[in-house]
Length: 396
Ligand SMILES: [Zn+2]
Ligand SMILES: [Zn+2]
Image (cartoon, rainbow, N blue to C red; front, side, top):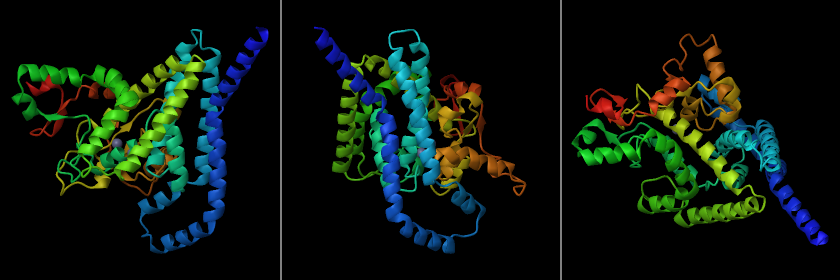
């Protein structure tokens, strides 16, 4: 009996160790692949850089891009630091799994996963490291931890190509969370208006809807969406997407089994709820504010989509690490190849440089956290006033 208990305890400890080391293992794997990739590509990269330098126009923005684009060194230290903090936090979560300390560890890991998601998102933009292979492998691995298939990034690319463009060729919403104009809303019956209010209510949007979307919707709705919109969205082949979905689903199933074995499954679901709520709250405010950037195709361009169509959220200093730089969304949309870990430095160089008499960032909408909560109420686009408005404003 004692022997059986001992074996069981040993087995459980082994699996726990495996899970807690998973993120650290990714870090070392990342380093190994990075090292091999560096050895193989060093010569080619040098040749390519020489060619690029010869032909790159001497524009300020271009030199800033050269300065703040991804590097192996910065990516490694950023990832290794995050993997270490995250592993430590998961050890705490397990150790205190049956105590009230969960009240602290669950939100903490939820916040840490915002940063994990930003790394995943940078990998999707092929911007986290200079190697597309490492970005893809790392993005796929982190996608398991975040219950998000790598395919998420294909729709996200389309978001970048269409933000604020009402006539975009991808037939994609110019704002993914504004579904109607004031004129359309006024034409609805009372019942339809009530349904709309419930469907896009701020509370449901940043809680139940987003939790369901990340946990289940991405696996089912995403496939349905791309089946219908294969021509309009920016995606690779359907079988390729299916493979990515399969890899993520199998990974999530294995991870869930391990979490269940160690009584961490429900705590992990709570963690998903925390980070998906914060992520959706942030995403709404990155593109839904006044004055809005809503223009026709002939006026739309990627730079304005960043500088006028994406906000800068004033994240409190203590929370800055968790957001991984994504609060500087205006730069991200202007050039998605700048990794999150360099966005703040890029911003500070531009606004702090005396060469810029008038900063190109002067027109960027800066939002306080209080304004962010207010913006959750903006639900319709008023074409006459060129503003986002609340449901009650629409009927005044
Ligand atoms: Zn965006
Ligand atoms: Zn992006």
